[in-house]
Image (cartoon, rainbow, N blue to C red; front, side, top):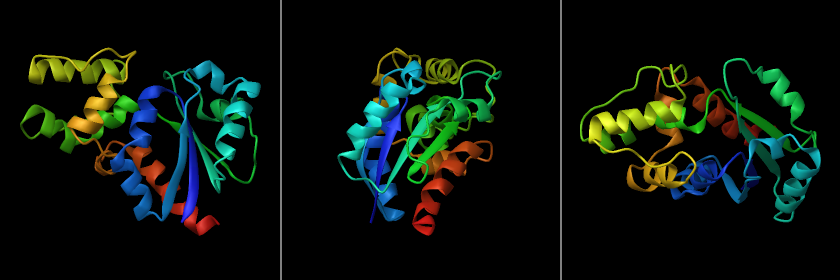
Length: 196
């Protein structure tokens, strides 16, 4: 088993990557998670001394690879520039992954979880090109389909509901024809065994 540590942008991401569903997915890729750490804010990702602190913290668990995951915020941000702003602490074992949108776009792409939540067959057509922020779209879909929202964006409640109650799965999101970033993420995980 290849040991993998994760540094993720926020607490909602931590909920997803620590979930039992995600841990089972890792096992199928012959990977085991040795920790999920979040700096708790986007700005700390770009402060080298902060990222080094979190990197060294997760290194104590002796991972073979450390995956750093951050969102692309807004249409004006360039993927290359974001990658350049994340400090390269370990050129061999550090893998940077940038989600095209926020985590909530993957929630929108999981038709199985949302069908379970809405008690009907459901598909959101364009999860990675929403007109509004993906969280706002997700919240609106819950209000329209259940007459109640998911909770505050600032809390982990929406992520916990999606994971624990509706069984959100990155694999399901990756099956959505308009969610290539989830497929890319799974491909990166799959490639880890080949690259060691």
